[in-house]
Length: 277
Ligand code: KIV
Ligand code: NA
Image (cartoon, rainbow, N blue to C red; front, side, top):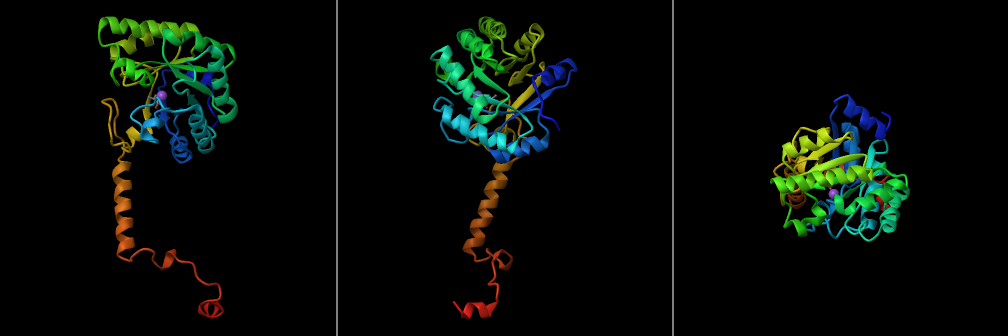
């Protein structure tokens, strides 16, 4: 199938077809996602937790993000790919934000970049958009600012907080985002923003009243066992399968069962060859 472009995402919204993204960080899982027919792949900065084992996403760097994004692109050459701008890569100045967004395009062949924040980063969004790139917004629960939110907490659950999320949605829309991701907000807040904005609105932990869903491969496949958010449904249990496979491998090596004859190379001249050694 032909790789989607931003217009295809708008057409899907128009036709009421839900879009589905998956977050992956490497070439192998990217190839699974492409084979599964996902509409979009996000190489998320959640790699900081899933791949690198940090408690959050703050330490992720541009170089790490680019390297993983390149691997994902090689594994999924025909899928719409979104690069996730890491903490610090778009906060210092508009010039810096544009330069780092350009790196995703030039070095990792992305179709869009995503960055977190609302009113506070609207000028950075505008600068990147003005440079000709596609920006996906991301508001609500924004993991990069978990320190100021007091942890990974759902947002918009009170009238004041919901109002702030809606203000952020308006700000990033006016700044030029082409789609908006809402994370960790009540379904009513998502529904309100979905109705209010003409662009595709996607959700993760934001209910069903929007244009599509995102999940981390690590959550939907049961790979990450430190923590499972309320909104993550487990569609498979790779963690258990992988652990059991390793248990079996260790046991077979210790018992002398593996490697078996079919896993061994033979001397090309048979036993006679061995005599010449
Ligand atoms: O990094 C990530 O995985 C994300 C998702 C929560 C959408 O930004
Ligand atoms: Na992210």
